[in-house]
Length: 615
Ligand SMILES: *[C@@H]1O[C@H](CO)[C@@H](O)[C@H](O)[C@H]1NC(C)=O
Ligand SMILES: *[C@@H]1O[C@H](CO)[C@@H](O)[C@H](O)[C@H]1NC(C)=O
Ligand SMILES: *[C@@H]1O[C@H](CO)[C@@H](O)[C@H](O)[C@H]1NC(C)=O
Ligand SMILES: *[C@@H]1O[C@H](CO)[C@@H](O)[C@H](O)[C@H]1NC(C)=O
Ligand SMILES: *[C@@H]1O[C@H](CO)[C@@H](O)[C@H](O)[C@H]1NC(C)=O
Ligand SMILES: *[C@@H]1O[C@H](CO)[C@@H](O)[C@H](O)[C@H]1NC(C)=O
Ligand SMILES: *[C@@H]1O[C@H](CO)[C@@H](O)[C@H](O)[C@H]1NC(C)=O
Ligand SMILES: *[C@@H]1O[C@H](CO)[C@@H](O)[C@H](O)[C@H]1NC(C)=O
Ligand SMILES: *[C@@H]1O[C@H](CO)[C@@H](O)[C@H](O)[C@H]1NC(C)=O
Ligand SMILES: *[C@@H]1O[C@H](CO)[C@@H](O)[C@H](O)[C@H]1NC(C)=O
Ligand SMILES: *[C@@H]1O[C@H](CO)[C@@H](O)[C@H](O)[C@H]1NC(C)=O
Ligand SMILES: *[C@@H]1O[C@H](CO)[C@@H](O)[C@H](O)[C@H]1NC(C)=O
Image (tube, rainbow, N blue to C red; front, side):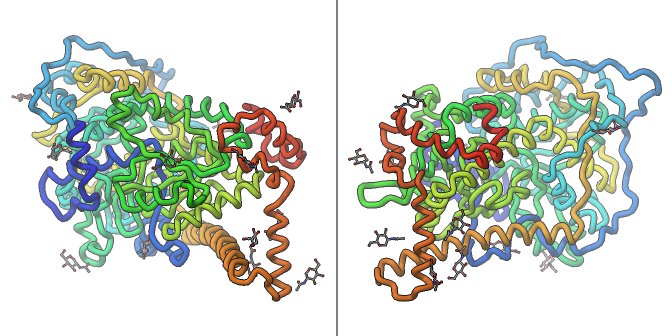
């Protein structure tokens, strides 16, 4: 593993699997993730300031304008529930009748042998009884979070094309790692090409947990899943008559030029290789870790820790690090996973990384799983303009949930963001708070399962054929996977196992965006981006002017620059001790006392009531 990873670090991370055939390329690309995603990460793209009109909040506008012509499709076979008292809530436990099968030492450690063994022990699940269905009508009396509306966006192209045919599905096979067929609540897997590490194993594990959470309610379906980082279904290849060939392909992220359907990534059930535990538990740890240092007592700089080797943009970020010659307000650290794994992951504990007022998210070779960990900290997240989106990130608003940073001139953009935050502490805290609240409330495991449920249900409605078990597919169930797993994989599976069905049912799927709503959302995002662009531009103008002619004779500008200086030098900021806050004497109790007056501001207290309650 260590060797493969080290080799990968030296490679160029932009090999697109689409252009290659066969299983070798997913593997190559996947290796990068091991390196780049680290304990940290965010969203990016190029020439942000000049391209704000191209915000990628959905796949492609052109698909939206097409009417949905889908009428009747194949209907799925969910067993009828007899009327009468509700059945007791099914509960689950894990019992393995035999020890795991012997492992083959010749199989590379960068692919999941557990999945191979589970597929080889193909009789394990057959003896288990059919899941006991829960009432099909049950629905929690709550509307799902707004990001669920993008389910409609992602599936719209196929709705507009009249549904999903077998021919479309077959085309998606070209790059898929596995095919999943669900029939009457049972899952069948055909492994097409092993994925990198345990991505396929834990993605399938997550789907099996969904089947247990809502027994009998996930409709019959047949889908192709690609575990490689980058989206590959280029929209411009499927216009006009070519729409009939459009492959429906599931993966973890998308961008504004592709039609891949986004699905929660494996890390929600754990990333065994780098000891990132299942999200349910990690989310709780983060919530506790977040309370350890109050925002005002955190270091007043922007923090990033990750693997810079995986992408050029990350190497550029490293150049913004503080040194004796420069101060861009950035504190950049390298994560060395090989060293960490030897040292027992003591320095990669995500819950101990809520120590700075600002945290940077930067994409690696594609989206980064670290996004949720960074946003969970109450620190204002500085998002370096992203190119990719995952299933939840399209609802995040600049200056509301995060602060946008240019992808060119990163260092000065970061410096500006930190200066802005330190002179608008209340607003910066509100932004940090809004993001961590979003992560805690809208990104709970309950919502992850409901997202999967609605996505798969809406997808299944589009199928124009009746799913059947392919001869190559083997039934999988929690027992067949977990009983072959060993070590940390097994622990993560036990920890993330759904222990009982949710009879309350899923939240209610909100409707698609109307064209008007969609446009407004886009405009709002653009407006906020423009505001930051203007602020940043003004600030750099002022600085330039100051540098070139200190005694600016233009009175208007003088006034402007005066008022800005006044703002920048509010009492709290002029405290010299505060400026030195990141130094070891940071823990100086005097510093903490110094920041009190601000907290006693009644306005501030009102605005931040909820957060104060758990300090
Ligand atoms: C596993 O590593 C080998 C080389 O060590 C590489 O050739 C192969 O592509 C990798 N497989 C995956 C799935 O990453
Ligand atoms: C997608 O976004 C990039 C910038 O990230 C932009 O250059 C490109 O024009 C956008 N494409 C579409 C189809 O909007
Ligand atoms: C299980 O696998 C064995 C050998 O791999 C094969 O002969 C058998 O047909 C499989 N059974 C099922 C139900 O797929
Ligand atoms: C849903 O909740 C609202 C208020 O929270 C309540 O008025 C309504 O009766 C509930 N509906 C159902 C079907 O339980
Ligand atoms: C349709 O697909 C063919 C083959 O991939 C391609 O040559 C052609 O340009 C596509 N047409 C459109 C309108 O995208
Ligand atoms: C960034 O600077 C800090 C402080 O000098 C240092 O500890 C750290 O190793 C540097 N990071 C990188 C990636 O060089
Ligand atoms: C930026 O500068 C322009 C003109 O120089 C001015 O009209 C505008 O109000 C300024 N905006 C901010 C947010 O300071
Ligand atoms: C402008 O220049 C003066 C003296 O050179 C310096 O003290 C001040 O910090 C500068 N202001 C800005 C906004 O750069
Ligand atoms: C500058 O500010 C002063 C008072 O602060 C005001 O009297 C004057 O009109 C302003 N000048 C300009 C050009 O805005
Ligand atoms: C100064 O701060 C006030 C209140 O926070 C704000 O309304 C004003 O626009 C700021 N002025 C400048 C020049 O940043
Ligand atoms: C910051 O700390 C250094 C020592 O670490 C000290 O020499 C300097 O005076 C301090 N600056 C301020 C503004 O307090
Ligand atoms: C901080 O304030 C508290 C009470 O407000 C006081 O007891 C304590 O001595 C102060 N600490 C310092 C270092 O000034």
